[in-house]
Image (tube, rainbow, N blue to C red; front, side, top):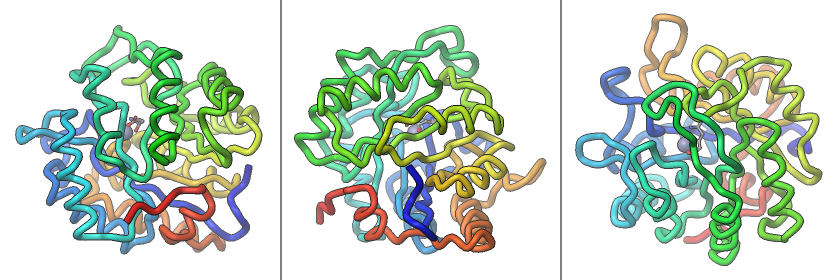
Length: 285
Ligand code: KMH
Ligand code: ZN
């Protein structure tokens, strides 16, 4: 389903689990850094920030207290923005740690839609585990808590779990599917125009889609996503460079570029209030 005419929803994926300050010192890790990046990205046109928690050493972490701290910091620095917390976590986290962010009660959270083999990165050769029984339990919890699920799909086979949740009414329309391309650390299909067109073609009905593409594919495939009527995600979780050989100087620089491209395409970035209305997200403050 296309976004309403003339609108694009921009998510800034601020940090993720795999990128460190060694690869780009501006990756925000601690709650105050995350909150500052959230405000800068909001001011640049992002309606949503997607966030992973890190411990004091910058490693992915999954404690309720850390997620509470992050939400409090973002809400104080930038009360308007929609916070999407990750249940994908990192390779070092247990399933319980990954979903502990739900207890912090964000407006939105990621929900990974199946099990794939990690093809590179810290867990290469191991599965990225998301069993149907767990996906159903997490979706049920999110529905009960009015947390909007962003359903992460790295290949078309994952649409089976999306359809299962729809059939069991564990998710409410409009559905929101994040098409993730090129993320070999999590077993995704390649970041190509053809894969994006194919993933979009077979989306379930009443589903908005977002395009996430890693590294050098971020700019071309999010541009294609906007032309196709999708939402887009940029940010350092997926890409730490502004252009080849030039590290991004922060998440906001990537959002600013996307907003410039959007406006050239006569698309205006949705405000957080507009994004809540389009996606059916309950404001919690
Ligand atoms: N790592 C991304 C490509 C999550 O956090 O649960 C997908 C993602 C999923 O952001
Ligand atoms: Zn993530």
